Amino acid sequence: MAHVVTEKCQDCRFTDCVEVCPVDCFYSLDNQLIINPDECIDCGACIPECPVEAIYAEDDVPEEFEANIQFNVDKAAELEDAGAEPITEKIDPLPTAEEKKGALGL
Image 1 (spheres, rainbow, N blue to C red):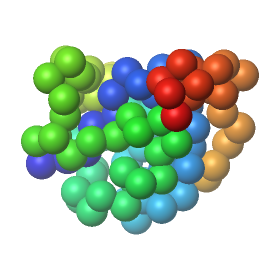
Image 2 (cartoon, rainbow, N blue to C red):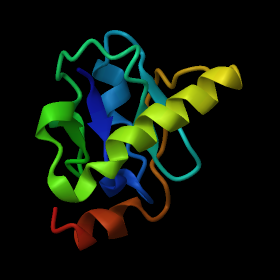
Image 3 (cartoon, one colour):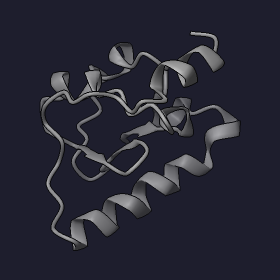
Image 4 (cartoon, one colour):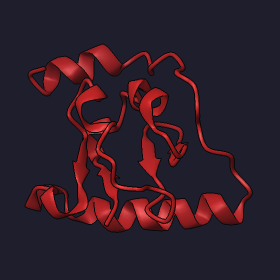
């Protein structure tokens, strides 16, 4: 089992979570992060670090975000095939991050 970044991360891309990840399983897309499920060790350290509450254990993903499980799998495979490197250090969030956080009521 792995953790999943849901679409709540879209237009945010806060990277607080990558700093606590012991195995560097986060990858950056243009508008969000994803977790490579083959690299995630299910430690859960990332969950409390996400300012928009976008990360869930796979078994705890709310029904409305279940498609995001496969999205993480598919995008991780694409990035792996492309030779992408994981993101391992905090970077600035997207310019729309605070607005999205507010829209989520956080």
